[in-house]
Image 1: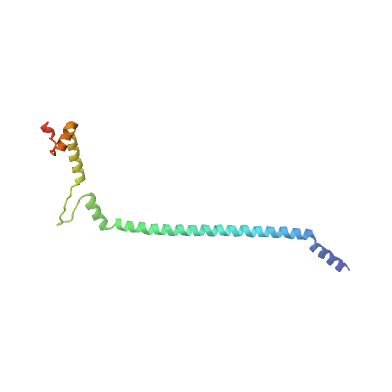
Image 2 (image 1 turned 45 degrees about the vertical axis):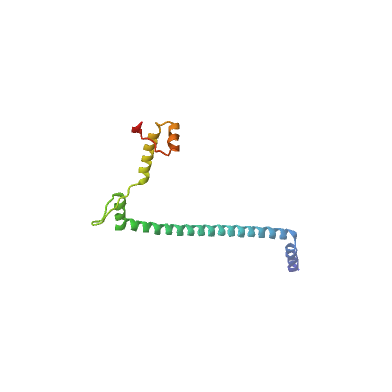
Length: 140
């Protein structure tokens, strides 16, 4: 009989609300632990993918830097810099120099404006309507 009373006590405890509440609390703790671990795993995977993308970008930058370094160390770079900065040429090569026409036009325009400033406005209009060129400063 002791066995039966012991079974009935265990059976009664397993069917009680206290056991149900205790089991529910333990299940909630396990679920929260699982959720926290899952979230941490998610964050770690996200960080890993971000770092992999950064590694890829740095590898591409390294390759570009190595390409630039190999170009800077080449004879073509030295020749290009000598031509542009030091104005050097190869033996037997002809060089054609072109003047910057914008600066000469600007200087001519400023000189022209300086000569016009000594002529009064009505005289300028007279020359404009009669289609005659303005007199130079030496003509005044």
